[in-house]
Image (tube, rainbow, N blue to C red; front, side, top):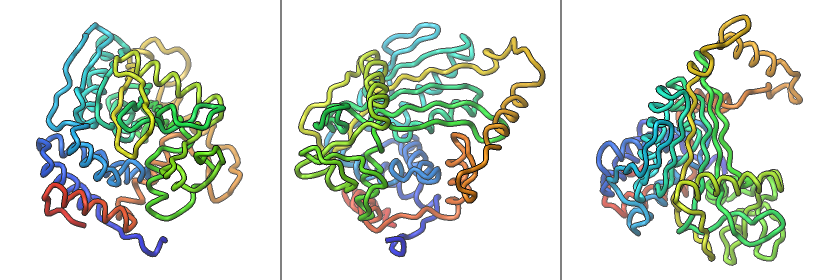
Length: 357
């Protein structure tokens, strides 16, 4: 399938995405924020959260699942806690604003938490950890994804869909290098990675799906059905438990809920978030020991990555370094498969946009 891939300049992809969302009714700033986020996901090596999402987003907008031009409202504001309601607006601008608010509050309080309910799909969660790290804040971010898309994961020991993919991200500044970033789904894979594999006609690297009768498989089509299968949680019961806590802390605590009605659909769902930001300067103001924090981080990174790699061609890397490497490589062009290109064209045609790749 590799010979069928086409490469596109990142700025061309941003222009196409921005044009599509503007034609769909998004204000200019909102269309720009969505486009930049999606293309950055491709650049970071996470194609599952990149421009492959344009068509599902446009469909969600036209069905009224997500609403253009909505500004989140403040439900509650305390010195170190805020609760926001995004009212089903697009997730990227809402999550950007929530991340900035958490950092602004933590700048004063040392640490702060922002809960956000009822956003559209926020995309790659690690982007918000990177956004905060650029301002000098460490973060823990939890996300759940209730209806209308239904569940995607079978609970540990079960076979029907009951839970969302529920990603978790963490970030830590590492100047002058790119930040440490952890970003993973509590499902074995993000659903978007199944879409990428399905579009490419490739099997999954692992048997991360169970068919409707509970048989493990590496066929992404078995997840989508019919009859629909289910994803399994990563790490067995441990990933399952983390998944439950994303529902509790991001979904139920925010007031956004954790309902995953059956049957599931391939429709793009929304998100609820918990964003906890810590001011690194405030936390380390009384630091003891020799050297500065950047020096300590550099020494720690050097120690960890000095381990002899199991594969000499694959050096030991720290969280966030694979994304940084992908950005360097992909600035020369982002490879897309023919089906994804066709889906972007379909989205453009749906909103009457001239943007075609």
